[in-house]
Amino acid sequence: MAKPKQLAIIGLGQFGTGVAKSLIQKGHDVLVIDKNERLVNEFRDTATHAVACDATDDKELKALGIKNFDYVIVAIGENIQASILTTLILKDFDVKNVWVKSTNDYHTKILEKIDADLVIHPEQDTASRLVRQLINGHLLDYIELSNDYSIVEIKPSKQLCGETIATIDLRGKYGITLIGLKYEGQIDINPSPDYELCKQNVLILLGHKKDIARFKKAVI
Ligand code: ADP
Image 1 (tube, rainbow, N blue to C red):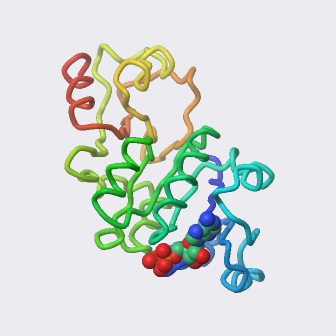
Image 2 (spheres, protein in one colour; image 1 turned 45 degrees about the vertical axis):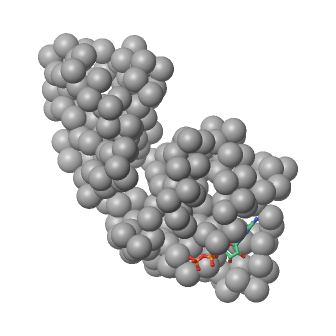
C-alpha cells in the first residue's frame, strides 16, 4: 500500500483554493501557503498547516520541511516569475512531484524546461479532477499532458521482470519519471529502488513522448 501522501499547495487563488478544499474535505493532511495572510487565514481551522510566506524565499520553504512532501502543487498563476522561481527551488530541493499551474504557452514551455513533473492547464484540468487523479491514482486520464509529454501505463516485458527499479534506471537512461507502480489494483507512488518488477505490475510513467517510445522500443 502507498503510504499517506504529504501534500502542499502554494498559491491560494481560485485554483489553489479549490484543490486545497477538496483535499481537506477528503481528509488529507495539507499544508497551504500564500503570501497573502488573509487567504491563509481562511484555512487556519481546516488545513493541517497554513502559512503566510513568500514561496520564492528558499529559506522559508526549507524551514517548512517542504523537501519531504510527496506532492507540491504550485498554483501561482498570474505572477509567472514567482511561479518559475518557486518551481526551480522545489526541483532543487528534489521534491518528488512538483505540479505547476500554467497560465499560457510560454509559461508551459519554461515549466517543461525546468522539469516541472506535471504542468497543469486549469482550463482543462479542474481542481476537482486534479484531486481525483491525485487521490485515486487514476492517472490514465492524463495521457495527453501536452503536445510533447504524456503519462502512460506499461506492463513490464519478460525482459524487465526480475529487474529492480534501480537497475532499469528510467530517469538516467531515458529521462523518464516513474510516478507509480501498480500491483493488484493498488498503487504505490514511492516504490523502493530495490523493488523487483514482476508481470503483475503496471508501470506508470511520465515523460517526453519520444523518450517513452525509445524506452518501449528498447525493452517492451
Ligand atoms: P487563480 O487564477 O487560480 O485565481 P492567481 O494567480 O490569481 O490564481 O492566484 C495566485 C495566488 O498565489 C494568489 O493568492 C497570490 O497571493 C499567491 N502568490 C503569488 N506570488 C506568491 C509568492 N511569491 N509566494 C506565495 N504566494 C504567492
